[in-house]
Length: 521
Image (tube, rainbow, N blue to C red; front, top):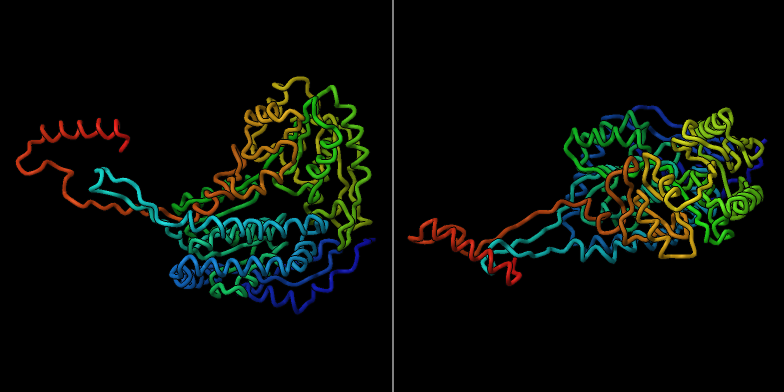
């Protein structure tokens, strides 16, 4: 029997009906969107047809023409108002995230912070990034080139269920700022918070129809979306990312893909053990392990392994698991019963092949249909599902190592390269180790937030963890095309009057030498 607390009073049937009303659904089919803690129906979400998707792109393109004609200053005025509205409505957004995803309230609130943080960064950075830039032409003084940044057109954004607001809306903002329209596809399970984000954008003054939301299962809607998009931003599994990449190539559009990870944490012998243990609780079990950048492989130097293991197990056993809409629980639910079953399969496979469960390993139906205990495994090998593939749940494999080189080799022994964490009291040494890890993000004495929340620095994956990046200058410029406008003031790029080509060639060689010597070229 579930012990879930009462649903927040903000989450009413009329409110939810108003949110899903903007989703086109001519298929007549709906997705039963449920409260994760109880399994109770929240609202029926319309499912979009191929014709709905085509019309969404038509409408977005019409609105995009208007939006792109506005000066950047006018567009940013809307984005600034949106930023204020998000903060004003932050606890309502937290309610929506929590009720649709089942995460604990602390994590839901922290997710709601990502949008204003990223929005604020690009409000400040966009005028510099999007202004015309003049460059030298091939002939000094008599020629120049201007780099002009143009919007792609209409961007397809496919957002995952684990951070629906942070990815769906945080990726939409840098697409909108240069003048693009957006067709957003959230996951069916977690469409409510992105829909509310779009509502706030329109409340802030964005042209209605500029951001369209379509819903449906990926295989049904992904192909029609990419057939009409000018760019695609996808966050999800590596397997699906490969399909998205192939479709993008077929249609000759660019893409950014943030994919899976099997992220390592390295605890060197000089690390502060208590701090590393405390961080590992979030690293392994934050958002019930449903974070692309969370830790699934935890490597500890053998000189401190026993101490770390015992303290980590004790701290994990003391975690507060709960289905409440307050800030008390340390960990909430998995997103669905299907996903809980996937996590159970990984743990059972590991046990059957010789791994030891140090703590956890059990579903918790007394708390809710999809709850699973935070779990620490010892003796995990590459032949086990939990040792080689992404579990994406509250399950951590604990390992020891003897040397720094061994730790780095173990960290890199994966097809993935999204995130890593290095713990040491010697920051110079930790930085040297970090540079040797094949990962797009590496955090020193932190799990993931320091790298990911540094909005001025690109964040992406290496190897099978993705293509491209969000954040940093790249995170906005990827939604633009560069136009090169070259100007020649006088026809001097050919022999002049009666000049022979032989004389012109010698003159050109002399000019090339002089330009290099004077640093004009």
